[in-house]
Each structure stands twice: as C-alpha cells, then as structure tokens.
Amino acid sequence: DDVPKPSIGQWIPQNASDPQWKEKLNLALLSIYDYKRILKVTSVSTQVMQGGTNYKMTFNAVLVLVRQECQIEFNIKFYGQDHFSKNDVSISYYECKIQFVVEREKGSPPNPAGSTKSG
Image (cartoon, rainbow, N blue to C red; front, side, top):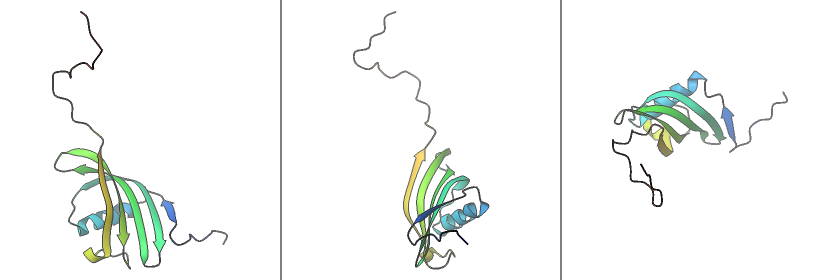
C-alpha cells in the first residue's frame, strides 16, 4: 500500500518488452492507415490525464518504401477510452531516424581542403 499513485500529468516509464505495447501500437497505426511493420518497441512511457491516457513510444520499424529499418518516436494520445476509432487517436509527433545509411556510390569524395596525398 506504500506505492505512490502517479500524479496527473507525470510521465511514467513502462516495460517496453511487454507485448501489450506492440499490440496497442499496431492498432494505433492501423487507425491512421499506417502499415509499418513494427520490429520492436524500444521505450514506452504513459501519462495519466483526466480525459484518458497518453502514450509516448519509440519503436523500430521497417519502412516499406525504402526497405530500411528506422527508429520512430511519437506520442499517441487516446481520448477517453483505450479503443481505437480514428477520432480517439491523435498522433502528435512523428519522426523517423534512418539508422542505416545507403552506401555511398563508388568514387571517393574529394579530399577536404588542405589535405594532400602524395604517392
């Protein structure tokens, strides 16, 4: 009984390996017609508000168009219940950081100014 109740508005880190987060994430993405293949949820925080719960998730996914794995961070806000009609989900921040850089085309870049190679 000594566990402090999270205060309203405070972000609480969660165990990202819990399978429920991947399910929630899939449903949220589907609700906005986003069909990324999620490889792994890497971090989850939840924030309890009076109107419902907000989720902040970071995950690794495959981008179909470029066939690269990338890490995506975004906040999901669920209004009211945790069910997923489009009106109940708002994704407020969405960024993809490409982790794998496509190899540079053959032919090395010019030397930076001031460096000369003899030989």
